[in-house]
Length: 139
Image (cartoon, rainbow, N blue to C red; front, side, top):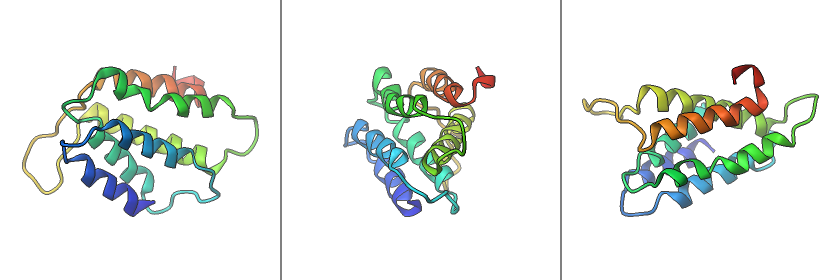
């Protein structure tokens, strides 16, 4: 997962490709059933890749938040009890993405200032709404 997230971040920097399929790929990976709890900063690395994707200059506002719909649907199926690994991994990834969206995305190994997500406010709002499903005290 960690190396796949890193690859996704590199691919996201190539603006010649549409960003939507990459965001959908990240979503599919987050929602895949697993017993593995991220333990190699996969959540941070995938959040960074998503931030790269969401910084694509051609991204439309609707597409910048659409990828969160399946996550919200999956969160709504939660039941009391132990949190499944996929859900914990997804929550942690979205929380890190919220930090990156809020503070800006720093470019690794450059002196460039942090850049903002293309539709920062819409992404922040939809992340908060999605996370409120599993953490209602944040709403």
